[in-house]
Image (cartoon, rainbow, N blue to C red):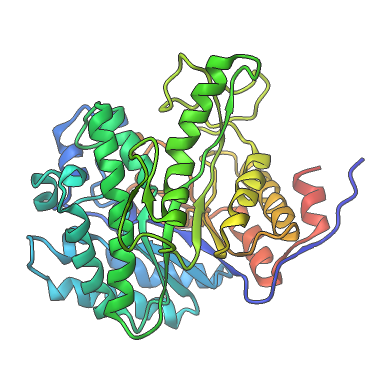
Length: 430
Protein backbone atom coordinates (compact mmCIF):
# COMPACT_ATOMS: atom_id res chain seq x y z
CA UNK A 1 0.00 0.00 0.00
CA UNK A 2 1.40 3.38 -1.02
CA UNK A 3 1.96 6.12 1.56
CA UNK A 4 1.57 9.62 0.14
CA UNK A 5 2.81 12.95 1.40
CA UNK A 6 1.95 16.50 0.36
CA UNK A 7 4.00 17.77 -2.60
CA UNK A 8 4.66 21.48 -2.16
CA UNK A 9 5.92 23.84 -4.86
CA UNK A 10 8.14 26.93 -4.60
CA UNK A 11 6.69 30.31 -3.74
CA UNK A 12 5.72 32.21 -6.89
CA UNK A 13 5.14 29.04 -8.93
CA UNK A 14 2.96 29.71 -11.99
CA UNK A 15 -0.19 27.65 -12.57
CA UNK A 16 -2.47 27.95 -15.58
CA UNK A 17 -3.48 26.63 -18.97
CA UNK A 18 -2.16 27.01 -22.50
CA UNK A 19 -4.09 27.77 -25.69
CA UNK A 20 -3.29 28.61 -29.32
CA UNK A 21 -4.96 31.34 -31.37
CA UNK A 22 -6.08 29.22 -34.32
CA UNK A 23 -7.53 26.55 -32.06
CA UNK A 24 -9.70 28.86 -29.97
CA UNK A 25 -10.17 32.29 -31.58
CA UNK A 26 -12.24 31.36 -34.62
CA UNK A 27 -12.26 32.73 -38.16
CA UNK A 28 -8.50 32.96 -38.69
CA UNK A 29 -9.12 32.97 -42.42
CA UNK A 30 -5.79 34.37 -43.62
CA UNK A 31 -3.41 31.55 -42.68
CA UNK A 32 -2.21 28.29 -44.18
CA UNK A 33 -4.18 26.06 -41.82
CA UNK A 34 -7.52 27.68 -42.71
CA UNK A 35 -6.70 27.17 -46.39
CA UNK A 36 -5.69 23.55 -45.70
CA UNK A 37 -9.02 22.92 -43.95
CA UNK A 38 -11.02 24.39 -46.82
CA UNK A 39 -9.33 22.11 -49.36
CA UNK A 40 -11.00 19.11 -47.75
CA UNK A 41 -9.63 15.64 -47.14
CA UNK A 42 -7.04 16.75 -44.59
CA UNK A 43 -9.01 16.94 -41.32
CA UNK A 44 -10.76 14.06 -39.56
CA UNK A 45 -14.50 14.04 -40.18
CA UNK A 46 -14.16 16.88 -42.71
CA UNK A 47 -14.01 19.33 -39.81
CA UNK A 48 -12.90 22.95 -40.11
CA UNK A 49 -11.86 25.30 -37.34
CA UNK A 50 -14.67 27.73 -38.17
CA UNK A 51 -15.70 29.78 -35.17
CA UNK A 52 -13.68 27.42 -32.90
CA UNK A 53 -14.40 28.56 -29.31
CA UNK A 54 -15.16 32.16 -30.38
CA UNK A 55 -12.43 33.12 -27.93
CA UNK A 56 -11.61 36.14 -30.11
CA UNK A 57 -14.85 37.68 -28.83
CA UNK A 58 -15.16 35.86 -25.50
CA UNK A 59 -11.61 36.21 -24.15
CA UNK A 60 -12.61 38.42 -21.23
CA UNK A 61 -15.21 36.00 -19.89
CA UNK A 62 -12.86 33.07 -20.54
CA UNK A 63 -10.16 34.77 -18.49
CA UNK A 64 -12.68 35.52 -15.74
CA UNK A 65 -13.43 31.79 -15.66
CA UNK A 66 -9.71 30.94 -15.53
CA UNK A 67 -9.29 33.37 -12.64
CA UNK A 68 -12.22 31.71 -10.84
CA UNK A 69 -10.44 28.38 -11.42
CA UNK A 70 -7.35 29.62 -9.58
CA UNK A 71 -4.99 30.32 -12.48
CA UNK A 72 -2.24 32.91 -12.03
CA UNK A 73 -0.74 32.59 -15.54
CA UNK A 74 -1.96 31.92 -19.05
CA UNK A 75 -0.09 30.94 -22.19
CA UNK A 76 -1.63 32.05 -25.48
CA UNK A 77 -0.48 32.90 -28.98
CA UNK A 78 -0.88 35.96 -31.16
CA UNK A 79 -2.03 35.25 -34.71
CA UNK A 80 0.63 36.54 -37.11
CA UNK A 81 -1.77 36.53 -40.10
CA UNK A 82 -4.09 38.96 -38.32
CA UNK A 83 -1.33 41.37 -37.32
CA UNK A 84 0.58 41.31 -40.63
CA UNK A 85 -2.10 40.34 -43.19
CA UNK A 86 0.20 41.22 -46.10
CA UNK A 87 3.95 41.48 -46.02
CA UNK A 88 5.02 44.67 -44.28
CA UNK A 89 1.44 45.82 -43.63
CA UNK A 90 0.46 46.11 -39.97
CA UNK A 91 -3.18 45.98 -38.90
CA UNK A 92 -3.27 48.27 -35.88
CA UNK A 93 -6.86 47.28 -35.06
CA UNK A 94 -5.60 43.75 -34.44
CA UNK A 95 -2.68 45.06 -32.42
CA UNK A 96 -5.20 46.94 -30.29
CA UNK A 97 -7.26 43.74 -29.95
CA UNK A 98 -4.27 41.88 -28.54
CA UNK A 99 -3.52 44.79 -26.24
CA UNK A 100 -7.04 44.39 -24.84
CA UNK A 101 -6.40 40.65 -24.46
CA UNK A 102 -3.22 41.28 -22.45
CA UNK A 103 -4.90 43.94 -20.34
CA UNK A 104 -7.71 41.49 -19.58
CA UNK A 105 -5.19 38.91 -18.38
CA UNK A 106 -3.65 41.48 -16.05
CA UNK A 107 -7.09 42.50 -14.72
CA UNK A 108 -7.82 38.87 -13.96
CA UNK A 109 -4.56 38.36 -12.07
CA UNK A 110 -2.75 36.24 -14.66
CA UNK A 111 0.75 36.59 -16.06
CA UNK A 112 0.61 36.74 -19.90
CA UNK A 113 2.96 34.23 -21.56
CA UNK A 114 2.81 34.82 -25.29
CA UNK A 115 3.76 32.47 -28.13
CA UNK A 116 4.80 34.30 -31.29
CA UNK A 117 4.32 31.39 -33.69
CA UNK A 118 1.98 28.47 -32.98
CA UNK A 119 1.89 26.42 -36.22
CA UNK A 120 0.08 28.91 -38.49
CA UNK A 121 1.70 30.95 -41.27
CA UNK A 122 0.20 33.99 -43.03
CA UNK A 123 -0.74 33.12 -46.61
CA UNK A 124 1.77 35.62 -47.98
CA UNK A 125 4.56 33.92 -45.99
CA UNK A 126 3.45 30.51 -47.24
CA UNK A 127 3.40 31.75 -50.85
CA UNK A 128 7.05 32.74 -50.45
CA UNK A 129 7.95 29.16 -49.52
CA UNK A 130 7.15 29.09 -45.81
CA UNK A 131 9.98 27.56 -43.79
CA UNK A 132 11.87 26.61 -46.94
CA UNK A 133 12.46 30.28 -47.76
CA UNK A 134 15.98 31.41 -46.73
CA UNK A 135 14.40 34.76 -45.76
CA UNK A 136 11.97 33.11 -43.32
CA UNK A 137 14.07 33.84 -40.20
CA UNK A 138 14.30 37.54 -41.07
CA UNK A 139 10.59 37.80 -41.89
CA UNK A 140 9.40 36.31 -38.62
CA UNK A 141 12.03 38.23 -36.64
CA UNK A 142 10.64 41.47 -38.07
CA UNK A 143 7.14 40.48 -36.96
CA UNK A 144 8.43 39.45 -33.53
CA UNK A 145 10.19 42.74 -33.00
CA UNK A 146 7.14 44.72 -34.11
CA UNK A 147 4.66 43.03 -31.77
CA UNK A 148 7.13 43.00 -28.88
CA UNK A 149 7.54 46.76 -29.28
CA UNK A 150 3.76 47.24 -29.34
CA UNK A 151 2.93 44.96 -26.38
CA UNK A 152 6.20 44.78 -24.48
CA UNK A 153 4.90 46.75 -21.50
CA UNK A 154 2.28 44.04 -20.90
CA UNK A 155 4.12 40.81 -21.71
CA UNK A 156 6.93 39.57 -19.44
CA UNK A 157 7.33 36.18 -21.19
CA UNK A 158 7.67 35.54 -24.91
CA UNK A 159 7.89 32.08 -26.50
CA UNK A 160 9.40 32.04 -29.98
CA UNK A 161 8.17 29.01 -31.96
CA UNK A 162 5.87 26.30 -30.63
CA UNK A 163 7.22 22.79 -31.22
CA UNK A 164 9.47 23.58 -34.19
CA UNK A 165 10.36 19.95 -34.85
CA UNK A 166 6.67 18.98 -34.94
CA UNK A 167 6.36 21.58 -37.71
CA UNK A 168 9.24 19.85 -39.53
CA UNK A 169 7.85 16.35 -39.10
CA UNK A 170 4.20 17.14 -39.81
CA UNK A 171 4.62 19.62 -42.64
CA UNK A 172 7.79 18.58 -44.46
CA UNK A 173 8.61 14.97 -43.56
CA UNK A 174 5.28 13.12 -43.44
CA UNK A 175 3.02 15.57 -45.28
CA UNK A 176 0.14 15.40 -42.79
CA UNK A 177 0.05 19.18 -42.30
CA UNK A 178 0.36 22.15 -44.65
CA UNK A 179 2.06 22.36 -47.12
CA UNK A 180 1.91 18.55 -47.15
CA UNK A 181 5.47 17.77 -48.28
CA UNK A 182 7.22 14.44 -47.71
CA UNK A 183 10.87 15.08 -48.44
CA UNK A 184 13.90 14.59 -46.18
CA UNK A 185 15.84 17.40 -47.83
CA UNK A 186 12.98 19.85 -47.39
CA UNK A 187 12.60 18.76 -43.77
CA UNK A 188 16.27 19.44 -43.06
CA UNK A 189 16.09 22.84 -44.79
CA UNK A 190 13.08 23.76 -42.65
CA UNK A 191 14.92 22.52 -39.54
CA UNK A 192 17.83 24.87 -40.20
CA UNK A 193 15.59 27.84 -40.90
CA UNK A 194 13.46 27.23 -37.80
CA UNK A 195 16.52 27.09 -35.56
CA UNK A 196 17.93 30.25 -37.14
CA UNK A 197 14.49 31.88 -36.79
CA UNK A 198 14.43 31.18 -33.07
CA UNK A 199 17.73 32.99 -32.59
CA UNK A 200 16.63 35.90 -34.76
CA UNK A 201 13.31 36.18 -32.90
CA UNK A 202 15.06 36.11 -29.53
CA UNK A 203 17.27 39.02 -30.53
CA UNK A 204 14.40 40.95 -32.13
CA UNK A 205 12.25 40.79 -29.00
CA UNK A 206 15.15 41.74 -26.74
CA UNK A 207 16.08 44.71 -28.92
CA UNK A 208 12.51 45.98 -29.42
CA UNK A 209 11.44 46.58 -25.85
CA UNK A 210 13.11 48.06 -22.80
CA UNK A 211 10.93 46.04 -20.41
CA UNK A 212 13.49 43.24 -19.98
CA UNK A 213 11.31 40.37 -21.24
CA UNK A 214 12.15 36.72 -20.74
CA UNK A 215 12.36 34.87 -24.08
CA UNK A 216 12.72 31.19 -24.87
CA UNK A 217 11.66 28.24 -27.05
CA UNK A 218 8.84 25.74 -26.62
CA UNK A 219 10.06 22.22 -27.39
CA UNK A 220 7.93 19.10 -27.78
CA UNK A 221 9.97 16.51 -25.92
CA UNK A 222 8.71 13.07 -26.75
CA UNK A 223 10.39 10.40 -24.63
CA UNK A 224 11.86 7.96 -27.15
CA UNK A 225 13.06 4.42 -26.46
CA UNK A 226 13.91 1.47 -28.75
CA UNK A 227 11.02 -0.95 -29.14
CA UNK A 228 13.43 -3.82 -28.70
CA UNK A 229 16.44 -2.73 -26.61
CA UNK A 230 18.33 -5.78 -27.86
CA UNK A 231 17.90 -4.80 -31.50
CA UNK A 232 20.71 -2.64 -32.87
CA UNK A 233 18.40 -1.44 -35.64
CA UNK A 234 15.78 -0.32 -33.12
CA UNK A 235 18.40 1.36 -30.94
CA UNK A 236 19.77 3.25 -33.95
CA UNK A 237 16.26 4.27 -35.05
CA UNK A 238 15.45 5.55 -31.55
CA UNK A 239 18.73 7.45 -31.39
CA UNK A 240 18.07 9.15 -34.74
CA UNK A 241 14.50 9.99 -33.76
CA UNK A 242 15.66 11.50 -30.46
CA UNK A 243 18.38 13.47 -32.25
CA UNK A 244 15.78 14.95 -34.59
CA UNK A 245 12.97 15.51 -32.11
CA UNK A 246 14.82 16.55 -28.97
CA UNK A 247 18.57 17.00 -29.21
CA UNK A 248 18.84 19.11 -32.37
CA UNK A 249 17.20 22.24 -30.95
CA UNK A 250 18.64 21.88 -27.45
CA UNK A 251 22.20 21.40 -28.69
CA UNK A 252 21.77 24.09 -31.32
CA UNK A 253 20.84 26.79 -28.83
CA UNK A 254 23.38 25.53 -26.29
CA UNK A 255 26.30 25.65 -28.74
CA UNK A 256 25.11 28.19 -31.31
CA UNK A 257 25.51 25.72 -34.18
CA UNK A 258 23.43 23.89 -36.76
CA UNK A 259 24.21 20.31 -35.81
CA UNK A 260 23.11 16.85 -36.96
CA UNK A 261 20.92 15.73 -38.57
CA UNK A 262 20.21 19.04 -40.33
CA UNK A 263 23.70 20.52 -40.27
CA UNK A 264 27.38 19.77 -39.85
CA UNK A 265 28.06 22.07 -36.93
CA UNK A 266 28.01 25.35 -38.85
CA UNK A 267 27.96 28.49 -36.68
CA UNK A 268 24.64 30.33 -36.53
CA UNK A 269 25.28 33.94 -35.51
CA UNK A 270 23.16 35.06 -32.55
CA UNK A 271 21.87 31.57 -31.74
CA UNK A 272 24.10 30.58 -28.83
CA UNK A 273 22.39 30.82 -25.43
CA UNK A 274 19.29 32.44 -26.96
CA UNK A 275 17.12 31.26 -24.08
CA UNK A 276 16.22 32.82 -20.76
CA UNK A 277 14.17 29.70 -20.01
CA UNK A 278 13.20 26.44 -21.71
CA UNK A 279 9.56 25.57 -22.37
CA UNK A 280 8.73 21.86 -22.54
CA UNK A 281 5.60 20.21 -23.93
CA UNK A 282 5.34 16.60 -22.81
CA UNK A 283 2.65 14.07 -23.69
CA UNK A 284 3.99 10.55 -24.13
CA UNK A 285 6.63 7.90 -24.68
CA UNK A 286 7.37 6.59 -28.17
CA UNK A 287 8.80 3.08 -28.42
CA UNK A 288 10.63 3.23 -31.72
CA UNK A 289 11.05 0.29 -34.09
CA UNK A 290 13.33 0.64 -37.10
CA UNK A 291 10.48 -0.24 -39.49
CA UNK A 292 7.92 2.17 -37.98
CA UNK A 293 7.76 5.89 -38.84
CA UNK A 294 8.05 8.56 -36.15
CA UNK A 295 4.63 10.01 -37.03
CA UNK A 296 2.82 7.08 -35.41
CA UNK A 297 1.96 6.87 -31.70
CA UNK A 298 4.79 4.39 -31.23
CA UNK A 299 4.34 0.82 -30.13
CA UNK A 300 2.97 0.93 -26.59
CA UNK A 301 2.97 -2.21 -24.44
CA UNK A 302 -0.24 -4.28 -24.71
CA UNK A 303 -1.33 -3.32 -21.20
CA UNK A 304 -0.52 0.40 -21.53
CA UNK A 305 -3.05 3.07 -20.60
CA UNK A 306 -3.84 5.10 -23.73
CA UNK A 307 -5.39 8.49 -24.41
CA UNK A 308 -8.00 9.11 -27.11
CA UNK A 309 -5.12 10.31 -29.29
CA UNK A 310 -3.62 6.85 -28.99
CA UNK A 311 -0.75 8.13 -26.86
CA UNK A 312 0.70 5.96 -24.11
CA UNK A 313 0.34 7.49 -20.63
CA UNK A 314 3.92 7.41 -19.35
CA UNK A 315 4.55 9.96 -16.57
CA UNK A 316 8.07 8.67 -15.87
CA UNK A 317 9.13 9.96 -19.30
CA UNK A 318 8.09 13.43 -18.12
CA UNK A 319 10.47 13.16 -15.16
CA UNK A 320 13.30 11.91 -17.38
CA UNK A 321 12.92 14.74 -19.90
CA UNK A 322 12.75 17.35 -17.14
CA UNK A 323 15.95 15.94 -15.68
CA UNK A 324 17.52 16.05 -19.14
CA UNK A 325 17.02 19.82 -19.19
CA UNK A 326 18.81 20.36 -15.87
CA UNK A 327 22.30 20.44 -17.40
CA UNK A 328 21.54 23.38 -19.71
CA UNK A 329 21.07 25.91 -16.93
CA UNK A 330 18.02 28.07 -17.79
CA UNK A 331 14.88 27.64 -15.69
CA UNK A 332 12.14 25.41 -17.09
CA UNK A 333 8.44 26.05 -17.64
CA UNK A 334 6.11 23.19 -18.48
CA UNK A 335 4.26 24.85 -21.33
CA UNK A 336 1.96 21.93 -22.23
CA UNK A 337 0.94 18.68 -20.57
CA UNK A 338 -2.49 17.12 -20.78
CA UNK A 339 -4.72 14.34 -22.03
CA UNK A 340 -7.53 13.89 -24.53
CA UNK A 341 -10.22 11.87 -22.76
CA UNK A 342 -13.96 11.75 -22.21
CA UNK A 343 -13.30 10.29 -18.74
CA UNK A 344 -12.54 13.19 -16.42
CA UNK A 345 -11.45 10.86 -13.62
CA UNK A 346 -8.71 9.72 -15.99
CA UNK A 347 -7.77 13.38 -16.51
CA UNK A 348 -7.53 13.91 -12.75
CA UNK A 349 -5.33 10.84 -12.36
CA UNK A 350 -3.18 11.86 -15.35
CA UNK A 351 -2.71 15.37 -13.91
CA UNK A 352 -1.67 14.16 -10.47
CA UNK A 353 0.70 11.48 -11.73
CA UNK A 354 2.47 13.99 -13.97
CA UNK A 355 2.64 16.65 -11.24
CA UNK A 356 4.18 14.06 -8.93
CA UNK A 357 6.91 13.35 -11.51
CA UNK A 358 7.44 17.09 -12.03
CA UNK A 359 7.83 17.55 -8.28
CA UNK A 360 10.34 14.67 -8.23
CA UNK A 361 12.45 16.42 -10.90
CA UNK A 362 12.17 19.69 -8.98
CA UNK A 363 13.42 18.00 -5.82
CA UNK A 364 16.33 16.54 -7.77
CA UNK A 365 17.53 19.91 -9.01
CA UNK A 366 15.68 20.90 -12.19
CA UNK A 367 14.70 24.56 -11.80
CA UNK A 368 11.00 24.33 -12.72
CA UNK A 369 8.98 27.50 -12.26
CA UNK A 370 5.55 26.88 -13.74
CA UNK A 371 3.05 24.36 -15.09
CA UNK A 372 0.62 25.20 -17.90
CA UNK A 373 -1.93 22.50 -18.61
CA UNK A 374 -3.12 21.78 -22.14
CA UNK A 375 -5.77 23.07 -22.41
CA UNK A 376 -8.37 25.42 -20.95
CA UNK A 377 -11.33 24.67 -23.26
CA UNK A 378 -12.05 21.83 -25.68
CA UNK A 379 -11.04 23.19 -29.07
CA UNK A 380 -9.98 22.50 -32.67
CA UNK A 381 -7.21 19.89 -32.54
CA UNK A 382 -5.53 20.41 -35.95
CA UNK A 383 -5.77 17.28 -38.15
CA UNK A 384 -8.02 15.67 -35.52
CA UNK A 385 -10.61 18.43 -35.94
CA UNK A 386 -13.14 18.63 -33.14
CA UNK A 387 -12.76 14.94 -32.31
CA UNK A 388 -10.44 15.31 -29.31
CA UNK A 389 -11.15 16.56 -25.80
CA UNK A 390 -8.18 18.10 -23.98
CA UNK A 391 -10.05 20.82 -22.07
CA UNK A 392 -10.44 21.11 -18.33
CA UNK A 393 -13.50 23.05 -19.44
CA UNK A 394 -15.97 21.41 -21.81
CA UNK A 395 -17.60 23.44 -24.58
CA UNK A 396 -21.13 22.58 -25.64
CA UNK A 397 -21.36 22.38 -29.45
CA UNK A 398 -23.70 24.96 -30.88
CA UNK A 399 -24.16 27.06 -27.75
CA UNK A 400 -20.39 27.22 -27.04
CA UNK A 401 -21.31 27.25 -23.35
CA UNK A 402 -18.34 26.63 -21.05
CA UNK A 403 -18.75 23.89 -18.43
CA UNK A 404 -15.81 23.15 -16.10
CA UNK A 405 -15.05 19.49 -15.41
CA UNK A 406 -14.26 18.26 -11.88
CA UNK A 407 -10.58 18.27 -12.97
CA UNK A 408 -10.79 22.07 -13.29
CA UNK A 409 -11.74 22.31 -9.62
CA UNK A 410 -9.05 19.83 -8.61
CA UNK A 411 -6.55 22.02 -10.47
CA UNK A 412 -7.93 25.08 -8.66
CA UNK A 413 -7.25 23.42 -5.32
CA UNK A 414 -3.68 22.61 -6.43
CA UNK A 415 -3.02 26.12 -7.76
CA UNK A 416 -4.46 27.95 -4.75
CA UNK A 417 -2.65 25.70 -2.31
CA UNK A 418 0.51 25.57 -4.44
CA UNK A 419 0.61 21.88 -3.59
CA UNK A 420 -0.61 18.42 -4.49
CA UNK A 421 -1.95 16.91 -1.29
CA UNK A 422 -1.62 13.36 -0.06
CA UNK A 423 -5.43 13.14 0.00
CA UNK A 424 -5.61 13.96 -3.74
CA UNK A 425 -3.04 11.31 -4.58
CA UNK A 426 -4.79 8.72 -2.43
CA UNK A 427 -8.18 9.45 -4.01
CA UNK A 428 -7.18 9.50 -7.68
CA UNK A 429 -3.93 7.56 -7.97
CA UNK A 430 -4.64 4.95 -5.30
